[in-house]
Image 1 (cartoon, rainbow, N blue to C red):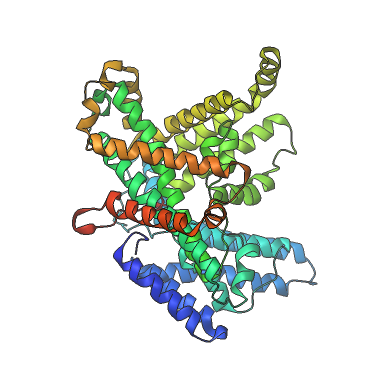
Image 2 (tube, one colour):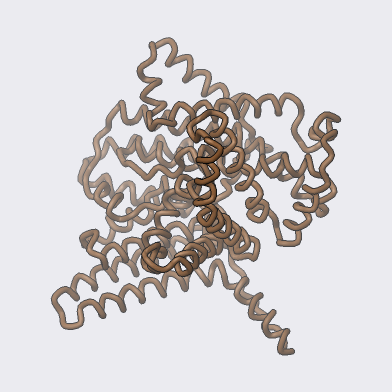
Length: 495
């Protein structure tokens, strides 16, 4: 069940209506049932994996509590953490990385002239498995560290792992943030629900008007087996378009998740903080997919030693985190290269920081000037877009061909109408241009941390309703809908 499907448009109001009508004490039960129904609408049998991961991490928490005061308490808790991680990561490996691991093994076997291992194991990747396993494992670590109390009620804990607004694509919530909200009942609040619906409307605009329109152009280019032949202009536009498609698609999903949760009375982690306004890629990754970045910082980077070690070890820790992030995204060499490139860029930026400071002082650059901010944003968008070539390509060979195509740059292709041969006509390009302006205006308004929704609420009634009607109209009339009004999948659902 996709957020942009008719199924969800029927499901969500029904869930909200019943949630606030039934007695407060059993509302969490209704949410748990709705969350499992939501997940089972993709593939009912995979709910067993969700329940299994939930049970293992819940039991590990209970057993760690029983270890308190026992001889060898710390060692026993470490074994329980290791057990929880081993089982959950084993599930993730079997369903997501088995074939990738087998392909690596067969490459090694060919080197020593041993026959390849054949396998008939073939299953679909359970939707959202990477997200809910990380969220469940965060509970294990938080209990071990003493950051949260053990939850004795299995079903309330199950709701923490399966809460449907953020179940399949995040944000990845820490137990200390979301679990306490599940343990208290929520009453209907009109202003809160209104703010949540505003956020959902913005999410639909990002997904349907921007991301799905950009996807038409990007998919047309990448569907060609010889992506290099399109030339530098087309490939450059595709590269930039996919950078914005990824942002609008995933930020759109995140806003829909945050908005749906807010209607129900829950507050989730903000997953995007104007990432394209970052000054460099290092800052970019503190603003993009914030919940995943924090997870890796809290549960991988810090345990490795973080920045409290020597410089070489520090840079190694950074690279390990980015490689792990790449592998988390997908079981393919393209994702490992993607993670490695992001890590390399971040390390190079840190190495060049002293030199940049000296140049800035010598040339008297004003970092706060509008021109400098535009240059920094352009740099971030270009570098992110370039690395995303590996994220989007089906193989490293396709990524190499795409980059070769970038080098065949003919500026005339900007004006000869060639860009109209990839699924978007002039009207669609105009819609995109206006949408980009709206995207950047909204981000600019939020630059000082102010809330756009709060500003809208301060406007006269006529203007507020005008904005609501305009936003709904834009989604209805300019949104991209598939044949028979099919909903297009969100990019991050594949992870």
